[in-house]
Length: 342
Image 1 (cartoon, rainbow, N blue to C red):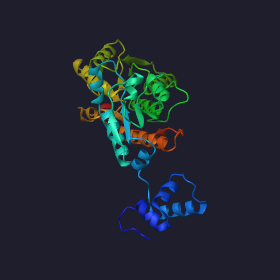
Image 2 (tube, one colour; image 1 turned 60 degrees about the horizontal axis):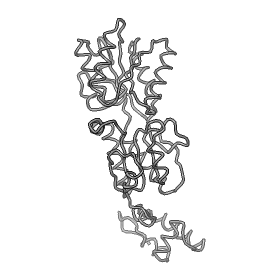
Image 3 (cartoon, rainbow, N blue to C red; image 1 turned 30 degrees about the vertical axis):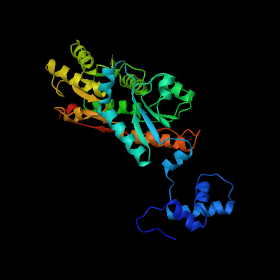
Image 4 (cartoon, one colour; image 1 turned 60 degrees about the vertical axis):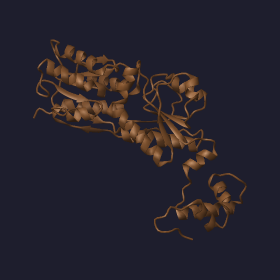
């Protein structure tokens, strides 16, 4: 038996080809029931030949699930900061990638408000959670584990063992890539605006920066900047750096929300980019690309990170206690005019 050209094989097609009932096909493909070995093998063989793939949604309902995934963004200190965070290109792309992978598998995706207590988490109607940028020893991961909700993170909790499955970029390598590029362009005093947080990408980037400076004999010029009101804090930090007796000749803004602050500080002090100071950004965005001049930046491919995280979660849901290996999404350095003096 064959299906019509271009038609997707159904469970009934498999049942007819294997000369069994629909219930027998379901049992064989889900590893359940007491079918004879030869019957189970025949059903699996016909399913493979016809290219049949069971519906994740139907499977989820049979297992008592509702076919929904929750996406949780980092927890900020205030509602205003949370709203600013949601508007960042990076998290918008993560949400789009997560939705793409969830919808392709027949799942819905819900973006939740900030949650902390067990009661709040129990009200979330989801089979599993994708949690972005956990902090060190993140209490939310503890709560989710205690109430039995499978979770995958985007980047990792840097202190948790065993670590939940996660998708991320190579934070350490990305920082060194930026530093090597600036060094190649002639920078000798490279400052880093580092996020004042316990997130893994901050810790990895700080470690890469410190080690790179030590290896190259450069004075480290690391300034921690809060993530909430990134524009103003980044502006003030950059102004202070550029007014030092020995100012930096390059500045790395590690977070997307620091971009405008660094650029505005240069304009305020009349420093030309890149002639007086080169500027690079650790997270690419539309503002980096559309700046005059366009800013060199690391593209973390957040859309792919979101897709990878949802696929990891679906794998966990399909295999219960299985803990898939992390997925490291390769990043891309976009070299632009802000770091090229010609």
